[in-house]
Length: 372
Image 1 (tube, rainbow, N blue to C red):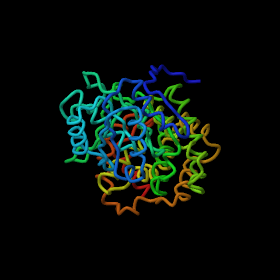
Image 2: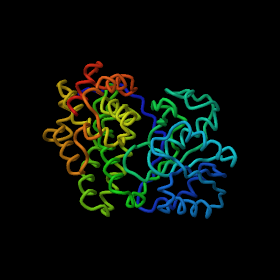
Image 3: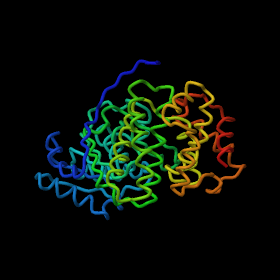
Image 4: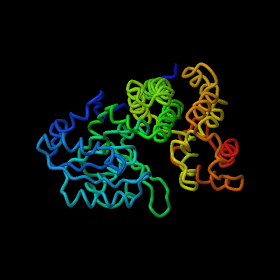
């Protein structure tokens, strides 16, 4: 058994269960908050979840301001607008309520509000020199696992390059996992975020940074997400399945924090940047091909076999079909002529360096060709 070295420092307290949003006010008080900024998106505002959060915070006697304009795949402009609201309100506590975009924007705001400068200054790891505000992350989708990660993924507004900005201080103090908040997800959001969570579990399981700690979380994450995904597709009101997906996504996020990601995400980001493919779909369509590429290594094939008794790549393709997600990147308008440029972009993605089997530009081209 390969028990490599690790340094596991749990930074985020997990509060899990139906109705746990009601604990928000007490938790903010527990961590010293007195002026709370809620960072969310228009869909979550419309769904009424922000109003519910406001109620619990106001019952605790806390002044609150809402920034509810987060866009999908947030960029530096989104973060700057959020910072303006936080500064004007003099917030001393942040709540990220929504999908990964809301939580990433909340973290990005925290970096600049407390440490100054701009997002580019924090591209990388550990570049915040001053303390940051306490953050509570409340996911309403079961996908990104951002609630259990210390990284914010923010795109450069001009180049559209995704910057991974991480620091231990950016991790949420608490993640509130309330399955009831995921029931109202549109079907498309459910399938895209669910496939993203599955990919997180499988990619973090095999990276060059994997450890016995990350393996515990990735294995349990895959077990929960794999069991819950098909059930949610069949019955969107299945609260037990929603709970499995939400907890699985958080475990996958914890695994990423300890293990990073690999080539499927390196391929996905260029598809999003150049062809506006939703992230979960982009990762999903590439994942079977990356699994086959990595399975050439016997030790990686053995890990995949321990996760699923059968052909794992074929199983992911079956789930894509079951979710009515495209199985070819040509569906998005990608042609043979686009592959070299996509491959160049993929080699520059930060997750590429952690794939268990190193990839050249030619390897990335072949992966895209296989998915064409």
